[in-house]
Structures are given as structure tokens and as C-alpha cells.
Image (cartoon, rainbow, N blue to C red):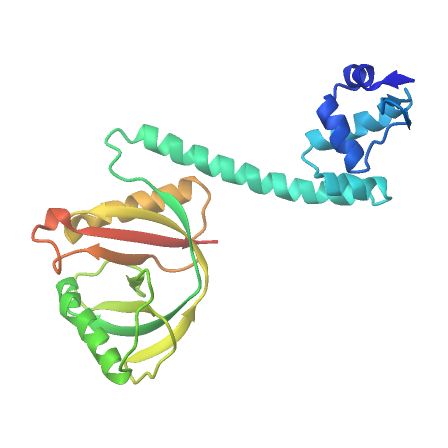
Length: 263
């Protein structure tokens, strides 16, 4: 019989860990002295201790180890662990890629982050504009028309609105544009405005500061980043206008976020 201190040394498990596993019913002492409560272990229990330590090193939870000891096939649990570790691996690789991209970008003009956009209710309108500058009048007119149809309509907090370009390419004129803005509830639409549920989306995000004339640089950087890091687009890029002509005097202060939905 081994005292708990000796068993701890042989099993490479701390006394604190042994007491914890005893409490959880994974590794109980072979006997406990009824007078001084000293705990004693059999040498044969070193094998059980080794199994517990091995499973813990693989990242299995105490509940999962209990299930294995109760007769569950350990292969099933390890298959689930493979899935979990693979997701962690992809996350780590993604973070490393972002770090490398930042280090390689000497000016650090653009930085890409990954976001999860929750499901939202949005109203949407689509049209064709002669020039990009026309959107500065068209977007507010859509909001006014929607509010007229739905008095008391409220936008979601925090606000979320964006534009997409269904043609999927840059055009000098005859620009098809789709505008969407998140609201708190469905409303009444018409021939121009409709309501829909925007599904939850994982996106790559990048911020462009300055004139829209140079926003193509941000798009190019974002698309290159997605390609180099194995991200597949799952929809049209979204332009979210944060600061612009409506609240900034200088074009240099305009701020636009570009979001690329990914699978």
C-alpha cells in the first residue's frame, strides 16, 4: 500500500489532483484510515492514474473520462476531440495569418478581422444609379419612403446598414445597387421596398478611411487576404458607411467598413 504522497510521486499527479479525482469518483483510495483519515493506494491503481493523466493531456473533460470508465467507447469521444482540435487549429492558423499579414504590411494601412454578424430583420431596396455619388441622395430617400409606409418604425441598435453591388464588378455608370438597413420588426413594403430576414453571417472585415475614389485598394487587399488564407466568399461584399459627407467636413475623415461574408 502506498501513502498518498508516495502515490503522487509515482503517478506524477499532485495531491490536489488526486483529491479532486477522488471527489469525482474517478480514482478513489483503496482504503482510508478511519482514525487519521490517511489515504492509501494500491500499486495496481497507477495504471488507472496513468489513463486519467493521458486522457486529460488529450483534452478530455472529467465527464468524458467518467463516460469512458463507465463503458463508453473511447474512440467515439476521441473522434469528437479530433473535430474540436481541428477547429482550434484553423482558428490558430487564421490568427497567425493575420499576424503575418500585419507584419508584412509595412504601413499597416489595412487590417482584417473576423466578425459574426447576428441574424437581423432588414428593409431592402434596389435600383440602378447613373453615378456612385447619386447614392448620397437615393439612400436617404429610401429611408424616408420606408418611414412613411411604417410610421414609428425603429432601426436596430446598434445600427447596421450596408450597400451591395449585385453586378459584382466596378462600373462607371448604370450601377446596380442594393441598400439594406436593420430594423426592429417587419413592416409594410411596396414595389421598391421589401423586408427580409438577414441570416447570421461570418464575415471578414476591413476599414477604409478616406475618399470612395480609393476604396478599390481596400477591396483588393481584402480579396487577396481571403484567397491567401483559404476563405471562400459566401455572398456579396457589404459596404457599411460609418462616417461620410453627412457628418464629416473632409473626405479624409470618411470611414467605410467592407464586410465579406465567408463560409
